[in-house]
Image (tube, rainbow, N blue to C red; front, side):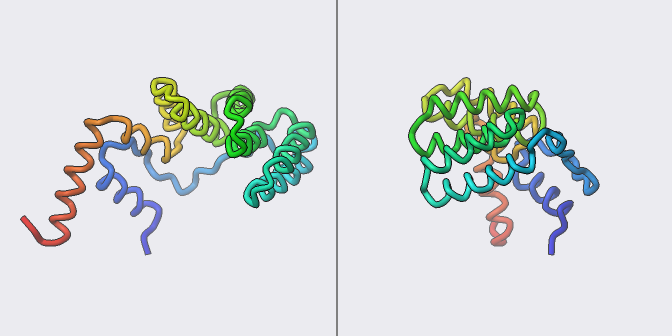
Length: 178
């Protein structure tokens, strides 16, 4: 079984154009929001909202996530999740507003900011605003979001071509071809 360090090394070999951070097994994300007022109630409401969204009950999900925001308006997480529900419901502008709020509340740091930047980048792609999308993917990648890193590579035609060539070479090596 591969260790996280083994996977990091393989990732560097197979995806040489992606930025790679050194693996730190002792690194933990500090829960910057654990001491906010009503955070426990907020998180329970948020979990319920996520479950409703996963079941396709988007109006009720949005309502539950709105209640989570009301319980703890300083927590960026329910804004991220309500943005997802809004996107699924087809309300792109409401989703963008929530993502902007999540980014502001997160002070451009942590997982909440990385998720919000990634979601907003995807919405910008949907709106065919490629430069804004790329800028947000870069911010998310800088915050450690691996999906955003892959998207940046995919948006770079030269990097995509190099990745394809390297993948072909690695495939031939694995098959014993010259």
